[in-house]
Amino acid sequence: MKSIAFFAVGLLFIVTSLMMSQVNSPAPQSIGKSYTVGSKTADPTLKMSVLPKKIKGKAGSVIIVKFNVKIPKKWHLYGIELQENKDGIGPQPTEITLKDSTPTFVLGAIKSPKTHVEYDEGFEMDVTSIAGNVTFNLPITIAEDATAGMYKSMIAIYFQMCDGKTCLTPHEETVPFEVEIVR
Image 1 (cartoon, rainbow, N blue to C red):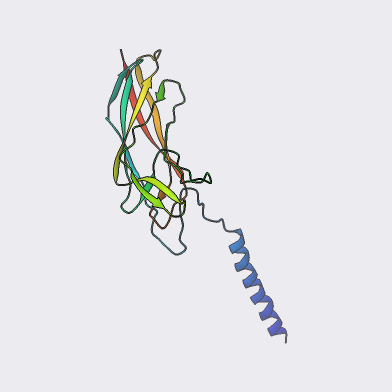
Image 2: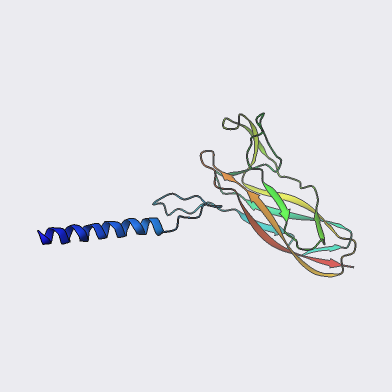
């Protein structure tokens, strides 16, 4: 009888330990990622670059920075304009901003690449999306009082990537760039 009691207590200890390890283990982070239990497939990612490589401009001038984004096949981003249906609901628009700690650069109206318009049953409206290799033209005004020299900044893109069946959690990525202000 004692051996059965020891066996039961030992089994109870093992089961309790396993259950506690499940409770105390951290859940996977879901910001900007999607997870499938048992899957080793990584989420698709954007490939981004800034052109030209050597950007030059004078104080008070406007420079055009080309922000290239390669969206994986079968995936898309939503357009840069806010889209809402009659209930005020719509997809997460793609947002492009400058992450600049100084007032040296001011981003103007972005010229979006060609978009695709399609009816979305979930939102009950036509929505615009962007797919493939695309280029956003970013007009950036250099401050009038900027002194000559090299300046660093970052382009931030906040987006939601979808494939028609699944949408990943919206998140932000950044790309650094430099501007040489000349006289």
